[in-house]
Structures are given as structure tokens and as C-alpha cells.
Image (cartoon, rainbow, N blue to C red; front, side, top):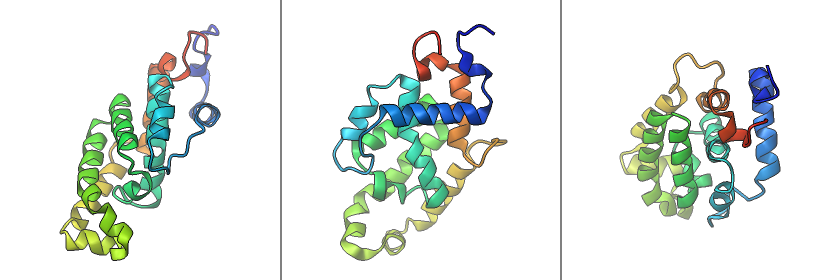
Length: 173
């Protein structure tokens, strides 16, 4: 293989490590902020790397919590939109739809939760906890036959192999 797109010769773990290194190097903004600095910062990245920067924290949320809890940490509307667009760019259309639905459920009650009502209690009071549980389960299992426990990171690897120029930029990566 020529040096063009040499990234394609890496194994999945090395490719993923390379993506994470590029994200760490290029994105310095705080994803937890309530302003739009993180969304603004990632808009400077190539479209594929941007999608990965936008979806990384959702992957962590799905691993540690549920799809709705994600918005308590990363609910800034511009970042939410970037995450939805990122999921769609990566080909995770159903996950994007579930993500949007979860945001539409949680966003109106975020202030109530922050005021101390309690996350589960608030969602139960609004009759939404069962649906959030369903959406979380669907999101975690959204890619049948996924190699890793992460449908999002699996999509990163597949996308990077199909579109290295959209992740790494340039012609020689």
C-alpha cells in the first residue's frame, strides 16, 4: 500500500487511538460548558473528526448512565445539535432519532431536575422514565454485530476506513 491513506493499514485499536490523539490535540474547549464554545470549537474540524468529537461524550454517557442523563452533563443546545449531526454523518440514523427524542423528553425538565427534584423521580412524575429506559436500551444495541461494546466507536472505525480524508484531512494520512 502506498503512503496514501496509510491509516487504513492500522488495526482497529491503533486507528481508534490515532483518532483519540487527534481529538485531544485539536479540541481544547470544555464539553461540560453551558455556552457554545465546545460546539464552536469542533466546527473547525474536518466533518468526520467533527462527528467523532461530537459523539464521544454520548458514548461515555451510554456506558455509564442512560441516554437522558447525558443531557444533564452535555445539554447545551448547540452541542446537542452537533451530536445529532455527528450521529447522522457516521450513519447512525436510528441512534440519532432516539437521541433527539430523549432530548425532547429531558430538555423541558432539566431545570426541575437541577432544582433538586431528582432525575428518576422527575422523569417518573412526567411519565417518561420507561421511555428513557427503552431509548437507552435501543441506543446501546443500535449496531447489531458490533465488534466492541460501543456502537459509536465501531461507527468511528468504519467511517475512518471509508472516508479517511474526512477524518484526517489531506490526501496523505
